Length: 412
Image 1: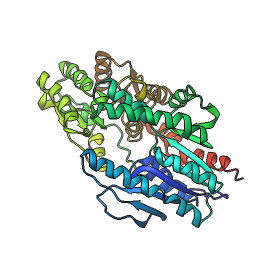
Image 2: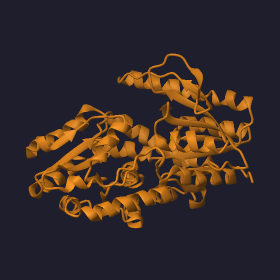
Image 3: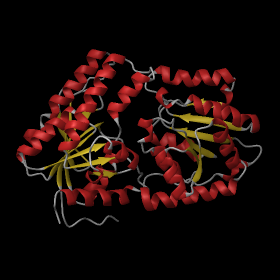
């Protein structure tokens, strides 16, 4: 049962997440946990579905101002979508004028952050910025590795956003929430003090995510041994690595099956993975589901013998906090992951899986070890759930976020 805070905040939340929001760090952390504590949140969000005219509605007991959108894929459609969003965010002046707020919180938006800086000064309230991913560096990374759809525009956008973020937005913020300690270290290199930032890693709602535990019947010799990956197949993640890992697993365990539960941003993402599957001739042992609803995806995890979280070693990915790892652990599944900063820390603290270098042979051997050690895997699953409940549930995370917001706003 949530204990409501004595002090209440009223904040305007402007996020890049679409309406209705589905990312748990928005929908659960703020849409549920902060609201349960009695804080008042008004939202400016853009519609996820095609919408011609802005409207106001209620969501999770909060007022939401929903912006129109254009979901076309052409460059012109994308430009219109961005313009709708930016023009709508100017509405924050009108919203802030009507009522007394403590702060405006901007998540992962840049032009809107500039608007919020002016608005916060005008209405004498705190400006908080939430950065969940190094977006400027990502645009430049895609250019450097040759996967950018429009290389020059990505290069231009990356440098422009980088200037805005590190020279204007973060310096003018009263406080900054970042995803991980690794991201915090990266931002410190740009001149932002460590004390100005609070890392908030990804978590889960333990009330909503199911605990499956270890399915011991999947370890019998005549039963399928399932390796499950939940997440994007975006080619920047280089998931063809996992296909090569699995081919090595199949050499020693013919009953193994690999389930890639997710899809790419465009058809080429999926095709790169399918081509690697075809190169090894292991089509019968690999299933690519495409994008699924969360509950459907969790059904695959339910029957997993091992869940995997490979993250390609790259500076922009090193800053992340992978939700999939915490979801696996919350479901009671033993995990094999590579030594990414956040994953290495979580596995070390929780003892909920095996952390190996980003190496195909070592990754494969770790999977096989858990195939052949059902009791070890079961214990890892139990430890994982316990760790998530203590450290990565949004009940616990909400406490720390709430405390910091009250501190920044100087509310006792």
